[in-house]
Amino acid sequence: MVDTVREKKYQHIMKDLIHAVKHVHSEYAIFLENQHKQALLEEEEKKKKEQAEEAKRVEQRTSKCLHEQLAEQAQLETVQMAEQETARQLILEASKKLSEAVQETGINLQGAKVAQAMLSAGNEKLNASIKQLANIKHEKEKNRREKLRKLERTCKQQDDCWQCCTSQYVRSCCHKTKTSLKNGLCYGYTSIS
Image (cartoon, rainbow, N blue to C red; front, side, top):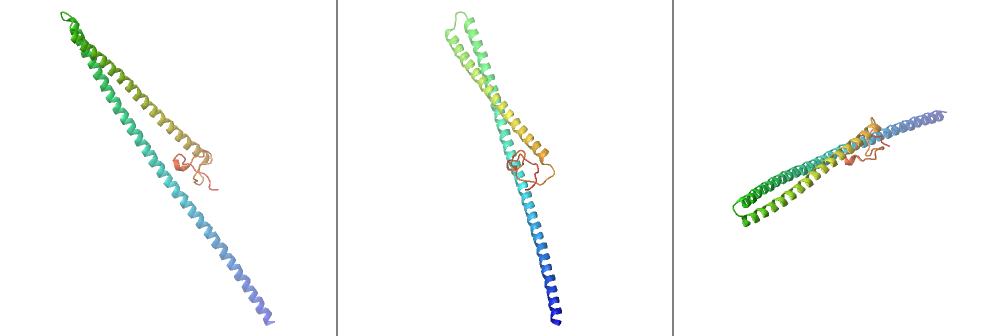
């Protein structure tokens, strides 16, 4: 009988021990799972931050490049305006020389030929300058429209993403716009699957 009481105590202790081990094991499993989730969230936040920084750098490079292009086009435009003014002055001077050559007593053939050559050169220079200026203005307008189109596309994608994904966890791709955060266009939130 003493043996059966001892055996029952032993079995009861073993049951309690097994129950305690199972409980500790489940608590540890929950702890590990929470730690893993926290690590994933931290990694996701880190990726989000890196992607936002990369998007900002890309935007700054693009903006800088566009500003440089616009400055270069403005400089070219200024040069072409100066060329036009030079051509106009050349034409004006040639017209005066031609008038002087014709008005003198007897026609000054040499002066008329010089004036004609100056007029031709001035007209060619003026026409070339006008064409260049038109090309520059066209490129400038094209670049401006392209920049506006990109900006509108970026804003629309961000709006779409914000509308569909608000107040959930970050993910690397918006499920509605299919836009990767890597290109800096999607700042919205989607749930982690």
